[in-house]
Every structure is written in C-alpha cells, then in structure tokens.
Image (cartoon, rainbow, N blue to C red):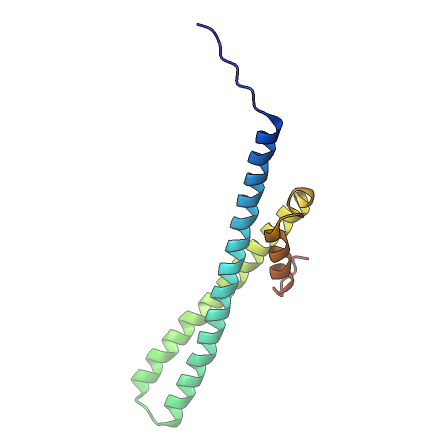
Length: 126
C-alpha cells in the first residue's frame, strides 16, 4: 500500500491560521461584551430595586412585601461582584491574547473593536 503524502499549500495554511485567530479573538471579544452587558444590567436593576423599596416604605406598604423585595435586592447584590470578577478575567484574557498575537490580529476589524471595548472597561487590564 503506497503512502499518500498530503501537501498543504502555504497560502492555505496561512488562511487556516488567520481563521483561527479571527475565531479566537471574536470569541474572547464576545465574552467580554456579554459580561459587560450583564454587569450593566445588574447595576441598573440594583438601583431600580433600591428605589422600589424606598417607594414601598414611603407608601407604607406591607412589611412582608418589602422584605421580599429586599431579598431580590440581596440576590442582585450577590451578582454584582461575580460579574465584576468575570469581566476582569475576560478582559485580561482578551488583553493577553492581543499582546501575544498583536502582529497577527492587528489588521483585523475585531481587533479595533476589542481595543475600544477594553478601554471602556474600568478594570486593571491595561
């Protein structure tokens, strides 16, 4: 049985490698974008819940209803640190990927979007 040799053209290999870089940075960017959006949502929900509880107290609503809303507030408060740590970790991953593969991804549009997103996040990733 004759052995078959596969010859891969350099251009094909380059395209495969570039595709891998595009997929990798796009995935990392999407994670940061999603977690940032989650954090913004929970912060907004936290403020709204505080306002709702204050209004319920001012209106003299039932204490049981107020306690239930305070439980919702506590659940939201527990999500904020989790989202912040996930955002920090995801931003660090993107930043490290960019540092390691800057030459390969610098020409990509997603690179510019990732850079803009990283500068909009107040975390110590830079």
